[in-house]
Length: 624
Image (cartoon, rainbow, N blue to C red):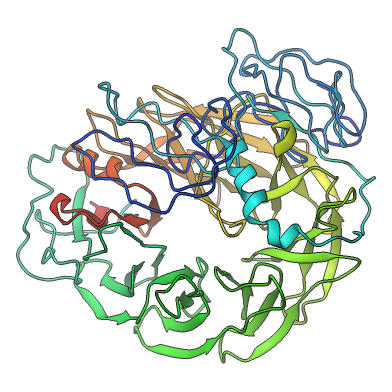
């Protein structure tokens, strides 16, 4: 298809696959764990406000997803978007038509043009999929009925998630006023919904109390291990948690330690032996946010609650050294103005700058000293900074002119030292920035919840549109829930290098594919199929290799593979094949963190189920 001067949104299912979806049951609430009885029980979390039921949505990567301002559109009969129509496109061999796919703000289609171009058309013969948003969270697969827990992990309805986000963010967007910026340059295009160095003994080490190492192994997870399979180097039992469960929100790997944040403490293990690297750092109340990035010298910042009452807020910060376990500075985050709350926080690192985001503003601190650097507050007519993303760049997303006819989002790159905006990008009306799939390069996942559209767009260093994904496919990265904040960096299973975006497709049964998409054109460069009868998720790139995690099946454990990203074959090569004996454990985590570092594969849960009878695992390390 010819890419219009302005990228156009695509329809189809591009929703991230963080957890397996069920038929929509309301907003962004914590999904219920539908796994088989043999699997650990799902964590219990408070149910979010419900939104009107919507048709079930495909997992991340489905052919047709709701068009988004920067997301690809894939639909049998694209409709014109807010920025003009384009001639219909021919269906592609991989596209799947979706009844809800529509052009997004940066893409245009024959029926309804998108602000930046025309959306791709659905492929031949694929069944039509209900609307699905690639950047939205997805619930776990429904249980019962003899359903295979290792297959058919559909993604959650993005529409419902976005709807809840809009509702919950009402206090942030309920202020009237005007916005700024230029939305004439490349509007978004919508898409409608629709070699290891590790070694260890045969028996992994764990006391079984989650405390961090040494002692006899209560369970031999390597029993029955076959030739060619990697070993469980060590594992840790989950600590005690309340009956309704608890979060385990962070995992960091250094050259010496594997560190895990869980409930009210941060624990560290020697990467080779699994023994305690240092005594756990404990907190009086539960951990509510962590910096997923770490400094060059392995410092992170953890936020924890100031109490347990309904009025408690997430306003306590503590710096921690991941190598020594020593506490650094600590401080209390002050409340903002009316409606600007610290009930939940977003914390991220960009160089030496710690960015702390409230509901309508942000404060930057020096991560070395804890000294306050600057505030990011309301600007323009009525633009309220409501989300931040860190890493190689510091990105801010603001809600502008809420509850008026001029309501829209704006994206800015901020100077981490001063807080000044290097550029500002106005997002077309109706579109919302839901996720950042990458910060450098900047890849945005946007949604138009009202019209069930999604869009994936890449911005240049000056904020102008570089490209919009123009692939008729349902993408399925794994994204968590965003109830009280946007959680811009809450997705895994998606990565990018300087010129390519790597997204997993969603497969209800069997193998999926990873699609490599040019960040210059938005077009598909190549794709590769999972080597197992399960889904394969991108983790990171290094040199000319893409590292990916292949989920377990009934017959085999998961595996780590390497995919060549240069010319020639893109066939995955297995680096580590996990033992079949731990496949059920691998598959049983409600949510998870994964990492492949120095030839070891680390897997940890993101949520404790609170059931002491299940002997839930907190973390495992695999190697040769």
